[in-house]
Length: 131
Image (cartoon, rainbow, N blue to C red; front, side, top):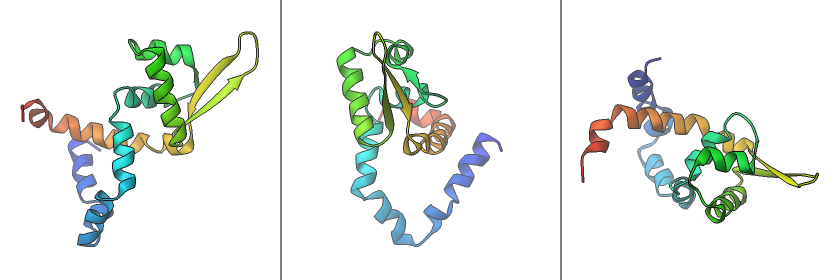
């Protein structure tokens, strides 16, 4: 399916076309605001992308992200772990290593975030316009 066709299909989804009040109720829910608040943090989407296919060591994750500081990466990973999106696994050895991977909940964000990415690409002119 082409990107515009997929975006159009998203608009016709049963979630948005259900009862008129349902979409408003869902969009105003505190849970939606909370997860969007977490997802909008600077490094979260990069972390989700880096962990999308497999768990990786912390130092590899930091290298993939680029200029993130240790403090910010640690804080962001802890928040994502607390939200149930990331699983932290300590690998015993010398030195001790830490792997990070997505939980099933974190992995379930891949498809909806893909739809958001498609929407963003199809609305580039809107996104480039100063508001």
